Image (tube, rainbow, N blue to C red; front, side):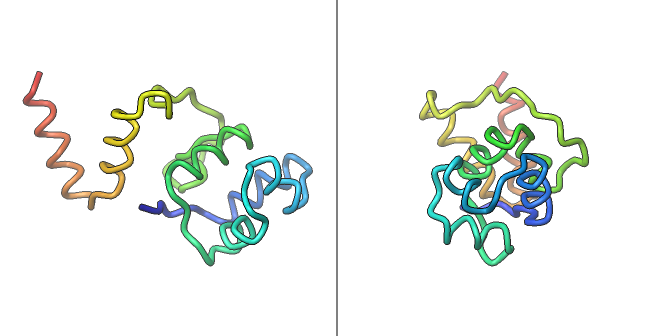
Length: 111
């Protein structure tokens, strides 16, 4: 499922890198028309795409999705290398906030 990407922040980080939209789409291995829709806010992006954008732009998913104002990069502990864990995180991010809280409480009890 798609995450709420802040197109203004995506544009800000792209411009900070000194890249054109075409250059950014190339570096992110995205079709230029898809990238243009992400940056214009016409299209939501899957978590995996936003994570890739964040890594390439030297920032965090949290910054690009308005969860923080800190644009420092972070080290991600969940990578595509662990397909089961990555799948679970992707699914968790699709839940409503209420369902995420319920899942969190459930997993805390599994300790």
